[in-house]
Amino acid sequence: MDASPADELLDVVDERDEVVGRLPRGEVYARGLRHRCVFVLARDPDDRIFVHRRTATKLAFPSLYDMFVGGVVGAGESYDAAALREAEEELGVRGLPRPEPVLTFLYDDGPGGRGSWWSRVYEVRCTPRVSPQPEEVAWHAFLTEAELTERLTEWPWVPDGLAAWERLRAAR
Image (cartoon, rainbow, N blue to C red; front, side, top):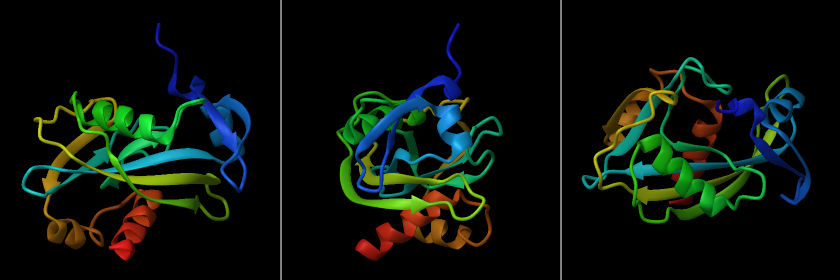
């Protein structure tokens, strides 16, 4: 029997992104402890961006839209390894090139939120046909940047993904 995502071990980190402990994801989330996440912007050969709606069963931000694939960095795992693993898992592909890191920032979910997490943003070109995980992705499409921008005010988006998107746009 597979373990629940809430049982996955995560590194707890401090304000300098140094590991200070290791706990199950469910406890990290419940206590709002700082951890690590990766955000991967996946573009197809036509430069369109993979956009999806998360499933209703996700532990964080269920049923919201996201322009990134990614997730938490497992205990002892590097950001780079997590970015490739998460991108291949969520897109349902194998053999992606290693995602390129673009920027790192500390996301804070604000008062009453889920806490804060160190966030590393990547980009990758996805040439294989995607077959997203049904446990992770309820709907998906590749949108042009203009189409994505138009939907930013129309659809409910994951707040950390929006923060990563804004930082990515500002960095260009």
